[in-house]
Every structure is written in C-alpha cells, then in structure tokens.
Amino acid sequence: MSQPPPPSQPPSTPPPSPYGPATPPPAGPPSGSFGPATPPPPPSSAWGYGADSGQGPPAGPPTGGFGPPTSPGAHPAPGTPLPAPSPYGPGSIEVRKPRRPGWQWALMGVAGLLALALIGGGTVWLLTGDSAGEGEDGGNGAQTAPGEQEPLPTEPVDASLAWQEPIPEVGDGLIQASGTWISGDHLVRLMPQGLVAYALTDGTEVWTVPLEHHEGGCNASVTASQDRVAVLQGLECEFLTVVDIAAGEELFTLRHEASRNSLGGGWDFPAIVGDIVAIGTANGGSGYSITDAKKIWEPRSDDNCRERNYANIDETLVAVMTCGGMLDFDRGSVRATAPSGEDLWEWEFGAEHEGEPFTVESVLSIAPLVVATRVGEMTESPVQQIWVIDDAYEEIAHVIDFDPERQVRPCRVNILDDCRGAEVTDGFLYLTGQPSVGGDGNSVVAFDLSTGTALYEVKPISGGYIKPFAVVHGQVLAYQLADSQTEGMVVAIDPETEEATPLMTLDRTQRDVEWAMMSSVIDDDTMLLWHNGAFVMVNERYYTHDEPDTPAALVYR
Image 1: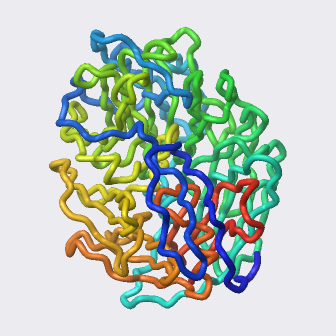
Image 2: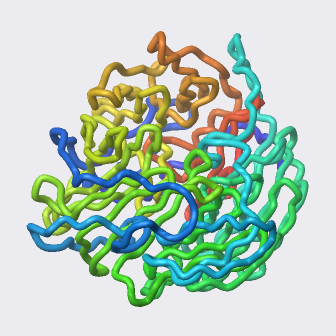
C-alpha cells in the first residue's frame, strides 16, 4: 500500500477492452493538463439492434422440491457456448424440452447422513450431507458490496484519495487478477501471490492466503457467498480452492476435471452459493459440497446435455444448459435453484429464435429474468439482443430496444453474470450509453422492462462520461469519469425523479491517477464498488506496457 503521489501525466493508451474491436469511440476527454488518451476499443460488433418481441417454446411449470426429477427428459440446466465462436446448427429443429435438472440435493432426515442417489440428467451420483443455510446477502457481490449498507450521504462528500496500491511487476503479456470482493471492512483481491485482504481505511495488508498452484490465468467466483469464494488455479485450472475471506483461511483445495480443449480451464468459471460450489466447463457441470469438500455431482459421459455456466445471482444458483452437439444444440434452458436445493423455476428454449440460431450469453437479472443473447449465424455477423422473459418463464415478453451504436454492451463475453455496464432495479434496466462521436460525452439510459423501450436518460452532472455500477438503497450509483478540467464524481440516480445528484466528488489533486485507472466507459478491466461511504476502483488486468505508476486499486473516503 502506498500513499497518493503528486500528479503526473496519465498513460496515453489504456489497455484494450475484453469485448474486442469494433467502431472506435471518441478520443476521450478534452486536452488539458494531462492530455488526451486513446480509449480502448468499444464493444464487439457482434452486438446488434433489438428486434420485435418473440416467443420461445413453452416450458412446463417447475416442480420444485428435493430428490430426483419427477419426469424423464434430457438433462440439467443450460450452459453458454465455448469461448471460441462457433456456428450453430441447422434451420428447423423439433423443439424438445430438456430433462428436469439432474443435480438437485436430497434432504435427509438425519443431519450429517450421506446418501447416494442415482439421478437422471447430467449427474451420475449425488452425495448429500447437511443442507446449506440461506446466504446472508443478495446481489452481485463483486459489483455491489454485500451486506447492510450505511445510508447514502445526504450532502455531497468532498473525498480524498485515502490510499492506493501499485500494480504488481508484469513480465511478458499480462496478469489477470479477476477476483474482487468486500468482506466487513476489508477489500479482498486475487493477486499474483494469492488472495490478499487490505483494510479499507488505510490499505494495510491484513492477511494473505497463498495459492500454491496459482498461475494467473484462471478464474474465481464473481460473487462471494457467506464470506466464501472459489478460485480455480493450476496450469490448466484443474485445482479448485475455497477460501473463507472473513477469516483469511483456506478451507480446502482439490483437483477437478477442467475443460478438455485447447484453452484448458481458462474459460471455466466457478460459482458459490451457500454450501455449494458449481463449476461450468466445456465437458459439463460439476458441483462440490464445501462442508464435506467432496464432489456431489458430475457430468454424465453418455448424456447429450451439458451445463457449461453457473452464476450466483441474488443468492440463487443460476445454470445454463444446452443439449445437442458440441458446436450446435437443439434445446436448452436457464434454471434457478435455491441454496437449500429447491428448484425455483426454469425457462426452456429451442435452438432458434424467429428462424435464426441463438445462444444465451449472460443473465442480467432473475427478477424478472433478463438475458443477453446472440442471434444469427456466426459467419453472418450475429447480433446481440436483450430479452425480458415473462413471469411464467414461458415466453419472451419483450426485446429491449438495445442499439450497439447507442449503448455499450453490458456484459463480458463467456461469463454468465459479469455485467459491469448494466444495473437492474425496480422494473428498469440501466445501460451505459455509447460515447458520442463528437466527444460530447454519454448518458445512462433507463429501459422499462414492462415494455422494452427506453424511457429516459440521465446525463453527467457536469458533462463528460458516466457509467452505472451499483444499486444501493434503491438508488442507481454511477461514476462520472475525470477529465483534464474536472475530477471524477459518484452520483446517485433516483428512479422516481429520473435525476442524478452528487454523492462524492473525488480528489482533484489526483485526477491523473484516477484517469490512469479508468479513462473510458468502455473499459471493463476496472471494477467499481461502493461500501459504507468508500468508493473503490480496482484494476483487474495488468499489461506489459502499463506505466510503473499505474494503480492497482484506488480507495476514496
């Protein structure tokens, strides 16, 4: 940890966006004391304009409860495709419903009793022990700090840069440090040396949990559950480690079967909900009991359905499954399960939407269910659409009026729940507007989920660029980027008044450091957090060409 240095020139070329190249955005803020910088590339052009509302295949009502499925069928929940883009299947395909999820937990009458239950679908054996309790906090813990938040300031806070952390030494290529959580008064980060906890007040290093097999190219759970996180490590991401980030203690490390492809487990993602860790891979999904440090379900080698993605959304385990070939599918589903194992709901879909192949890429919300999809053949520039699913989980209620020329792609690719450019609350979806071609800034656009249309937009208070990053006490928090003349700011958008008010103005003397951290609303290497009056900016990727004084974390109070 280090104290803020005096102002200096910001880097002129920020790191590229994880979304890939597309139409270049405007050149950044007006020239001034630290000069213009070239923003990272904008979202992938694979995103497209929303179409008229469509209708998916009907789904049967969820059965709920524990134990084996009550009706036969295909297999468990859905999964998104492999990271490498691939074409989809043929045109007209008979729609068949997936089998009910095959990885439900059985609740035994005697606590601690282990049972073996042979179940259909995507799992072979189920080993059940004590049932997990409900998670303490909802929400996406990596994007909005969990726990009871203090009331928001009633008057704008003139904040100082309390502390910053310099980036680690980078060799050739880059260091990926995708893993950021808040536990109590600690900021916990996945760093090259392992998991590190810093005191939010002054940046003091509180504890470090070394990761023996950590190579820097694997993924961690986006969200913590009950102050526990899951981390994959190893050359092929074949080791699963669970850490208690409240105590700073490793609970266990065990070997799991990573994806069998050219990338190994680099695109495998763990999700942790209650006492369960689920890992989605190209081979299918597997799950582990934290209490017993044992596998409780695994993919079936003879099944044609695969769970490839899991996420913790509002302390609910969300899974995506597809059935069919590795490079095409004929049906799939999105399914939600409570930490106790209760099957909550399932939305089932076929292989096509309005005659075009599609895949579910991300889940932005589960109340209501809002999904980001890719529609069209990969060889013909597929478009991105955002769908709102009806309350019965049977049909597409609305297609959001999303336009990639007007709004930034909300979610990272290949990650089910990492949607840093979007917030959903009280029936509205808030997206980051694209920077204008003339350099006049952007806005936050609010979409009514009951109609799919854009209802209003909110401009930055003092001009420039703005990005939503959290929902606290019903207010949508957004970050206004610094420029050559003005320090950054955190504002609160009130859905009732449709206006933004300032919460915190950042340290004017440290505008260059702030700019070095985040210089474009399209930059998604930076995690933004608000926790009890502290604003946290975290850099999760470090590149060889980064300047030595590029910050790894900034904390304002």
